[in-house]
Image (cartoon, rainbow, N blue to C red):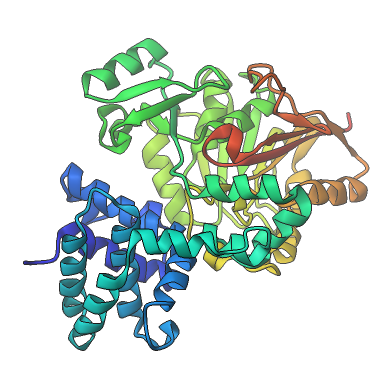
Length: 448
């Protein structure tokens, strides 16, 4: 029996990601997965994200079943074992016999035919009850035990335990291994909420309003990238927390705005939308490919958008001063580990210091282009204070011409009876609240 397309695609994607080539969310929307039928696309997605989320836990368990050190196996063999073990241990709808057989065929097709016997023997020993028993013996009151059980780097677990305590850290670790919700919004001046929902439901999608804010929506079933509204650019897939950021700029139709680190343009298009389609917005990014995607996705709907390729860590090649500037800074992404689980295996503790330097340089250069009385918003999808409050504090101490303003979006609803979005004047929407990415933001205003 040939290896299923979903398993082969997942295997190849995971190998590329392990080599540091791209992110799962990008690879799973490229060929060949984009051409799969719905069942194969779902399986490939489940396998890629599942193995990434459970990687160190899988390796720890597999090490008890393999006679030689796991790291001495060829990387293709290790990946086949992870894929097979994930199916046996976590996917009850996949028969064990099928998971084992497909893994044996996969290791043969990968060019490692000599390892077929090893893969067969190891996966036949893998057992859900034995796995749960082994996990039950882990010391979950230690960073090492939590690191293995919930498959996060121990250094990250340790710092979260120190900052939040054992209970809160454990909940965050558990939630990071849950699939994120997919949020979206209208991305057209002509597409109202009712028409958007009616069109999606007619195409077979199940959607409902986001619980914290009007205008944000959640898809319960269906791949929105296949919808007519997404393909035409009238719908934008954007995390609900991310949708709050542009609102902190208090946009007006007359505003001239800059979005630094614009990426594929989600926040830039939202800025134009909040400016009643009349605000002038420049999206700036150092990556030409990302801005080309941004223009394709958003340009037809919002003619007020312009794009500039430039490095925001250097003096900006712009002579104009702006009413509103957003710095959605490059960061560690520790608030996105649900959506981008591979980040946890790439990030090192020393990266936080390096990134804070980069983030401060982005703010320094953006500050030079803010009009007197203008607004500067700094945002990240990081959970780490080195990249959040500490960067803002360092910026304000070296820029006396800016004052700190309380970040506030009056449209955000209380969560569990609490106002979740303002702590010490900062916007803070953790992943447990957004059910997707964690978001931090600070608002600063230039002196008149």
